[in-house]
Length: 271
Image (cartoon, one colour):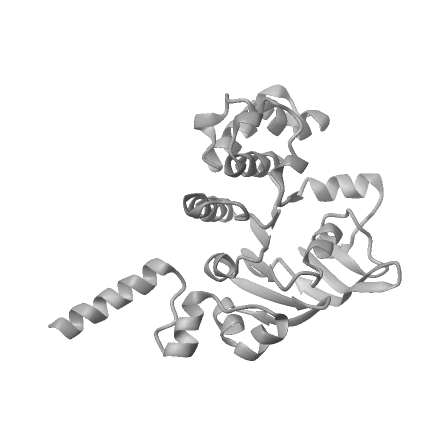
């Protein structure tokens, strides 16, 4: 269980997170959205133990997080964070060595390291470029290497900060597929993103943050259909939701579902 209980965090005298009660164990994919400065990045750093709240708690396995060296090590083997900029997490020029870095620090046997690295590279569809120097990779490929570096820990929770930022449409589609494969293995994924369409399509639950507080939360279709809440949070509705709220079209979860429905309607009218 990964959750927060009345979580408060301040930078100097300015509160950034204000009494957050969140539970990330209830849904396979949880989305975090909000305008710049709403507290998403600070929340991620609290969840990963990089920051410590002044009041309230991050709950791990039903108990307040243990901030001792041993406690944080245990947390980070189960809660892995992938930052927006993959360069922050890549230290080697060799892909296999970079992904294996954390496992070697933990003293994992080499045979097990080889197996985990191979599985992680397959999961993020990186086998075909694993022998290229990291400096020659595209931004999207580096993101996949960073995700693989988190996956080798076999963490139960994966925190993704802006996973589609800087990706072209093909890279974005590939990232969606990677997230779905991660979830299919029984893991939980928490995504912080300004890509509202991504959050709507991939998430099972959404928290909308506004000025450090939860403005609303629930199923993506219900949350994003609330025009008033979206305006208050400074967000735009996903385009599929906008078609529903403004034009009265059926609410679809994906572009494929939308065009399939429209095609069926067109065939029905033609006949």
